[in-house]
Image (cartoon, rainbow, N blue to C red; front, top):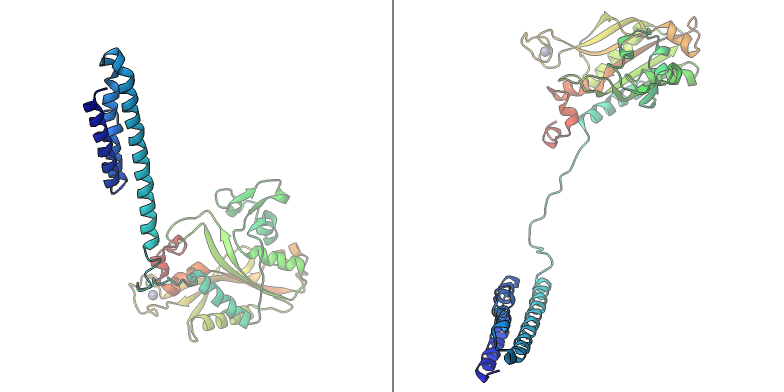
Amino acid sequence: MSDSLSDALAALEAEVRAACAAARDDNELRQTAARYLGVSGTLTRLLKRIPELPGPERKPFGQRVNAAKVAAEACVAQAHARLRAEARERELARPAADVTLPGRRRKVGRRHPIQRVLEEVVDTFVGLGFDVAEGPEAELSVNNFDRLGFPADHPAMDMHDSFFVADLDAAARVLLRTHTSTVQVREMLSHPPPVRVVAPGAVYRRDDDVTHSPMFFQLEGLLVDEGVTLSQLRGVLEAFLGRLLGEGVKTRFRASYFPFVEPGAELDVGCLLCRGEDASCRVCKGTGWLEILGCGMVDPVVFSNVGYDPERYTGFAFGMGIDRLAMLRYRVPDIRLLYENDPRFLASV
Ligand SMILES: [Zn+2]
């Protein structure tokens, strides 16, 4: 191999060393490696020329160029290690945290409007002497319907109106309870009279529009004793509404039909927004009244179904939608807002 070629390769090696040492980041180093060692890099092209040389020159030339290639690869590896070490040092030199930055305010949540109203309603009835009772949300059909005197062809017993969980034989059929009256049945089955309970909780029906949600919250109450009268029902509910909405709130009873009570009534309160003075009021639709709850005297059939003596005991029951009370209280136009968990809405009520 000629001296001039040997000198040229030595110069090339020096060039590679200098280029690797000058590389300031991975990208520059990659470009340097490609320039000498890539598919069309200087050293690669020299190796490809070996077959063109006269026979005796091939071996020494090949050995020399290969040595230059190995040296170049070592240079690249060394430079790569150097860059990694430099990056690590920069990382360590950076301050761990800038304590002069302003803090991030933590968002504080609060209780959901339904929960707030529910607790307030429960507190009010506890103040009137009621106990709180709870029961399972997946309930036997017999507790949800039969023992409450629902006729067998009542539409609520249809698959289209209720969520059945296990459709076994009639005695073991299970559904998501459609009302909390099931808790009253359980209370009466497990306690002799007198009974004085309210049962709050989630109930389920196949409804979904601006005023109905497939899951919603109810509170039902039951009072059973000897000599319970309709006027006592009225007195308890008026006391309840007075405490919840303020003394002097107007109320009226309207005869209505509900399963398992006879007679049944709906209780309206005077419109909280317009006080009956605005014919265009959207909350009461100009009637001056808002439907708040259903109530009535417990049908003696129910007492027979749970083993109470219907000749000796009378009682009253009432039920209200907590969602509806929350909508009225917080002026919520669409019930679905209460269940979408949008923080913008929840922060506004
Ligand atoms: Zn009104």
